[in-house]
Length: 103
Image 1 (cartoon, one colour):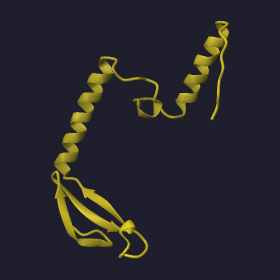
Image 2 (cartoon, helix red, strand yellow; image 1 turned 135 degrees about the horizontal axis):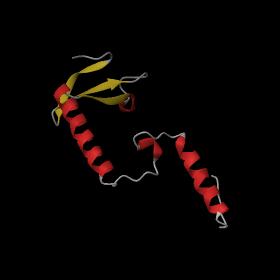
Image 3 (cartoon, rainbow, N blue to C red; image 1 turned 120 degrees about the vertical axis):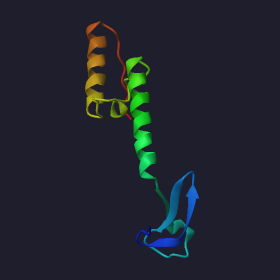
Image 4 (cartoon, helix red, strand yellow; image 1 turned 45 degrees about the vertical axis):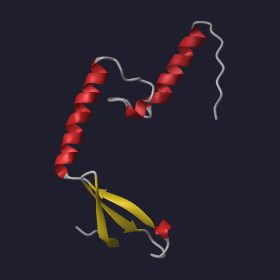
C-alpha cells in the first residue's frame, strides 16, 4: 500500500507496516518526514477487546481515579470544572478556608 508522498521503502515493526511520509517542504530535510504505522485489522480488533475487558475490570473494582474526567466513561472535560466548583462550595459551606490559584 502506498500513501501519497510516501517513500518506496517500508519496514515491519512489531507486526505493523511502517512508512515514512513526507511533510510539505524539501524532501532532503530529515525533519520533513513523519512515521506512519499501518496496523493490521485483527490487531486493532484484538486491542479493542483487551481494552474493553481491562477497563471493565478496573471500573468494577474501583481502580480508576475519577479526577481526569476526559478519560473516564460518561465524563467529559466539561464536567471537570463543575465537579471542581461543587467540591469547593462544599468546603466553603462547611466553614473551611479555601485558597485557589489559577494559572
